Length: 441
Image (cartoon, rainbow, N blue to C red; front, top):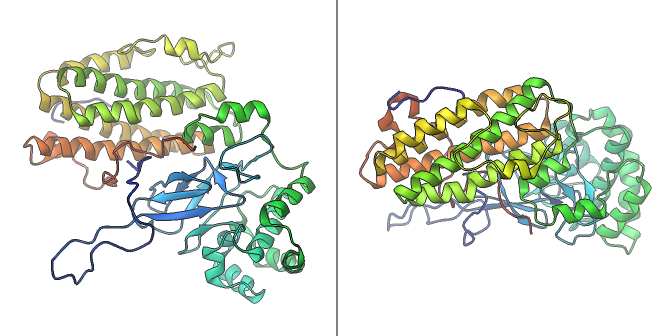
């Protein structure tokens, strides 16, 4: 929280399990009872093989929560197009990352302008010119936007041929292919479609055969990594699945600051909750900020950074050293001073404790807006920071709701314009955990 805080100056991981799947729902708009329609959850199947541990983001920046086996849920209908970042290709369809599964790495899948499936086929179908070329090859738009390789042998053939083309040419996003590229591929696609129609093997077996053919190009998960990922959260899986980058000194310093910042949010919420217990303070600290801190720690671990001295080339990451930093203590003096100030402010009253929450989340969003621009060239760091920001949006609305619940009619806006942000995405209809955090098992 690098900006000053003055007194006046969640896409969520757990979504309501009872939400029905689909793009519509709720009461009929013409229902004479006057009931307000409730947006229905939308489930998207993401498959090269089923993609585990990926981040799935719509055009509005909202993130879907993983349900397992390559299915991701948006709490309400997403804004198209949708894109994937990172993850693991579940080659044996076990539902977990095993030895022998494949890192998706930089491979990006995209939806078309609608549909309930994201595949390499839907990625091409988002381009009207390429969609027209695919329909000329015998594919239908409905098929491309809604069918996965597991369900449809034509889509399996298309996906396999595109994957081979992308890997052997180091292409991460096939939506960048030209019409000529697709024309050059058309005979190979048609040949594979005809072959797959005659073979008795299922899509998983055919994919295994392709991966064997591409063994020099794929990044295979070994037994040690699979064991480490067994209890990983979605952000930890995401970080591990994406390529390693070279960080600048400014980017390293930002990671150190962000770890301290997420720890501060967790610490101050828990400390204030001990004095003025509230659902907002407790749930956000234990369900979200703890995992936010762990998500940034996964980046520190990946890049072997000592949070206390990230610019020291001889420094190393130590989980034990981080765990030894007590609540309310930080490696950066500016955050130590900020924690002390926030706690003194929030301990004054139950209302003040919730107001501190508004302040912290707005400042987090401001910092993340700036820091996301700084790490724009780092897919793993940028993805985690965007996830943190999604959480801060959700937390802001949770604290806003908490204040309104105790009679502060303007919620966070009662603190003045600096903390009044009606434009923040409101995903608080879920659990309020914020971001795509949770287990993939």
